Image 1 (cartoon, rainbow, N blue to C red):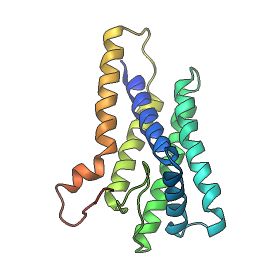
Image 2 (image 1 turned 90 degrees about the vertical axis):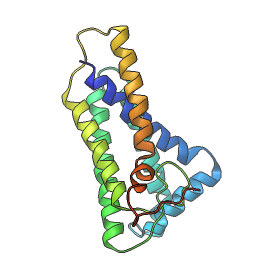
Image 3 (image 1 turned 30 degrees about the vertical axis):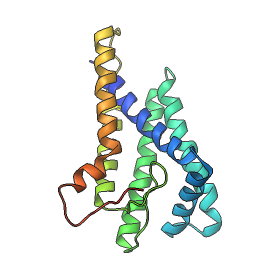
Image 4 (image 1 turned 180 degrees about the horizontal axis):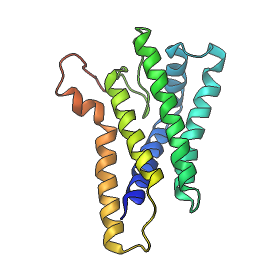
Length: 176
């Protein structure tokens, strides 16, 4: 079975896109740092270090998932990061604050319960990957199927909030 490979690819792609979105330009980086500050969850002086730690953790997930023998550690780091992100979103929503989600770079999209749902979906993928094992041997057809499934799943995850917002009237999400 290729469950672990598919989960590796999904989590690695999502975290790579997240890190790249924050690092793609100076404006994106500043927007992400400002969004950390605006959440009101850490002291203002800690916003830049928390932003850097977040991106380092995202890149760490990608690296660990790419290195043979460190896959489970990559999934564990992803689970810790996702749990932290979920906790932060819950705190923002419970506090009644309107904060932008700069999850994948600059965005006018504000946090909603859909962001929690998306991260819970990613928790499920990371957990499934962490408890599954690699196939006894890799076959080209299985690898191709895993890559295709991962690319489609990643595209869905990246647009999860927008897609589900189409079916709800109370959570519009304008994109910038």
